[in-house]
Length: 570
Image (cartoon, rainbow, N blue to C red; front, side, top):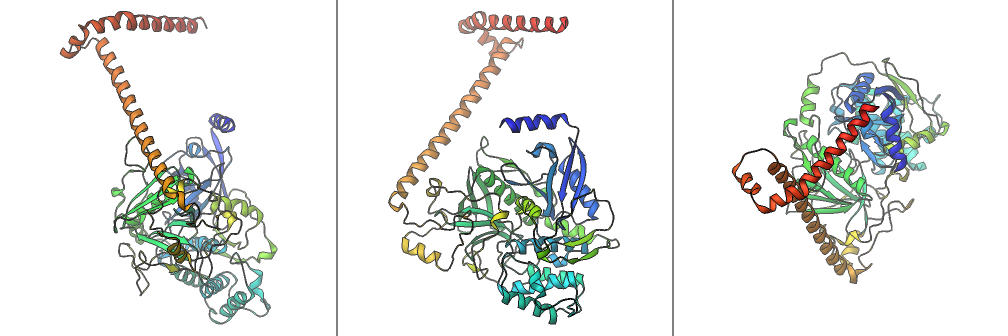
């Protein structure tokens, strides 16, 4: 606390700060900002450097000293949002994934989204089946090293590049076969577009995974897609709610609630920390406003609680998806020049370009599939856009769906991969903590099985990996403390009720105190109002006036004169 206070004092003495933003191609943009510069100023600088017009899909992410991720708010001062000492380090990432990325107007925008999805693929956030993974990797090869050339690409050349967290020889052979035979003649732009078309069809496209636990203590990943709210457990999507079905997002402490109008569903999950829960809530509010609303004028300030005196208030500032698409259609300019560089083999472990301040020269496309040690540190800040799943029915979305088959994703689970969804431990700065007491608060809210047998059936076929232990992959069974769950639930409910009553009582006392002070000021003033004259004529007021108010006023006047004399003497 002391160091944080001192760092704030040091920042206040500085007029300019150095700020470094890691871009999607792993280059760095360094600039100097004024102390009172807002986030919008820095974002506009970066977009101007990239020659980017379709910029509403992107955002700037940073991580505080407690390893909690945040999106930079453009309407607020940068220095006030950062809790660390300058120079500030952030990264540019896709914040709102386009529902149809291959249909974006400009190639530079498609390329940046392509770079983001490559990162998602590498970190295990874009999880898919083996056949889809091979096709995606082959498109990356074709886009960045061109056509297969036996003279340049010896046997096993695809194994030199790292596309996924884990490789197998069979997968590498399949990637090489597709690259050699099916993609010959495709230009980089065509390969990137085909890559985006393939990626957008995956169930894990376009999501930022937030590690949580359900009411039974089982690990889960919550995410917001262009089409709605999803929950991933194991290798399945267990919940999907379209945006027009989500009525309210709330949080209290580490508990996150999702209200839906479909059969009045309330989903409850537990975040690792209150800060992580608040970040989850703000992401949900922004995504819902961006994808659901027709106009930015419809955006309203949202409260995390139903009571005015508790909770947080937040308002999304920016254009909504429909407005962004309409604005993109009006773009008429020569496409900015894009210089492509070759794909870097992962075993060479290239270092990240640190840099000099970048100028407005044409952007060079660099491929850094394998994350180096330096980038590993950066990915702690990144970790954002992993991608849970989406449903195939999106009647409320402003973009038409390209899938022909529709399923009721709110009613049935969907298998998303051959293995459990588990993004790289190293890129999740907020591991899920144990919640021994909180898990019993709403045990039946999420439709948790009522019996042990039903719970075992519901968990069948959804193994969870325990790599790193951060995700608590062992999971808690309903047998653990089954006899005491009802007692704990009752105790927690009573405690919550008592806390709510105490808060209400404190607020009431505070309001009464303020009203009393206001009444005293009015009665001691010269206002000639009937009810004030009546109060002044009462014996109680006269006693208060002469015994308490007048001595207190004389004491304050004496102190003020003493301070004034000191200032004059100096």
